Image (cartoon, rainbow, N blue to C red):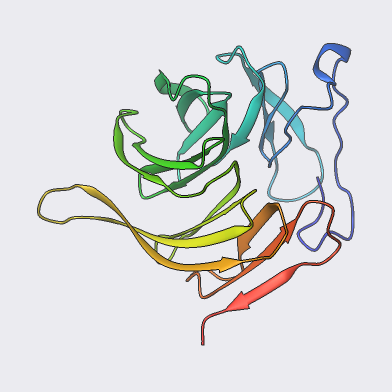
Length: 222
């Protein structure tokens, strides 16, 4: 773990041999997912660097591929299995989803879980129940990156097909249906996109990079 500007490493955690596989996915802190399926929860003080492992969650049987969090809820993905935790303490819902297709990325916004899959689909689930609310064939190949703009509900997706798409998530106030609308697309020619992030909370700009690239491409709305 590093300071927010990346200048100083403040903590490191040595994994047991059985958990040190190169396919582990240490996505973020305080929770970190391992290839064994375990999730480590860290206790981070407001001041100082006395960081400790406070809990180990063992609900998953497969490697953790991504973790997201939003004010008290944290969906965790392992292969094609979803667990939603309340403050990483109480398990709310579990479910097996899209058999044979790996979920490579997951994001959470206003109680909606957005998940990207190896078949190019984006699926939207209700975090409280795990029920499928919407799905879209977003890409022709494997989705490697999802990001959400918290202020607007814009969803960014990037995949092996060289495309990055911007979507808009919303709830219909009359029916409570979860809706997804396509807003924009960009093609990074001959590039397998492996990373994409919004640069501001409103989603007016985003950055993209690809496999075996040293460049980061930045786009902004004009």
